[in-house]
Length: 78
Image 1 (cartoon, rainbow, N blue to C red):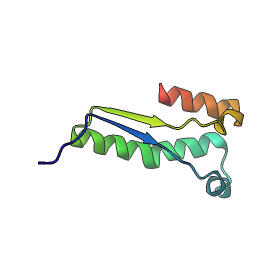
Image 2 (spheres, rainbow, N blue to C red):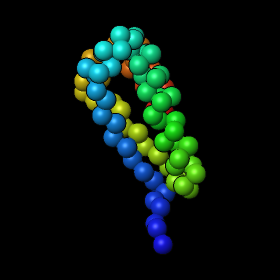
Image 3 (cartoon, rainbow, N blue to C red):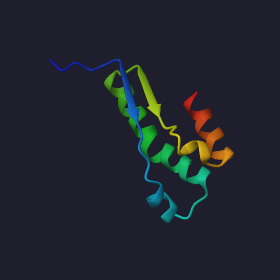
Image 4 (cartoon, one colour):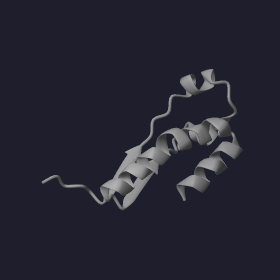
């Protein structure tokens, strides 16, 4: 029988060089990542019975990002 954990933590590792090639504003890139990657993971976790997910997306590099992007990430992480 497969054991499914109740809490899964994911450390996200973005690729800023790839994102910069998209030539989108920081908030657009963050929103795109949320819709394209995080929401499907959440949906899958719910289907599997995982009750708690932790996404760590805040690095020291992010501290020097625009304040709008930092606020966006903090709103979705809280």
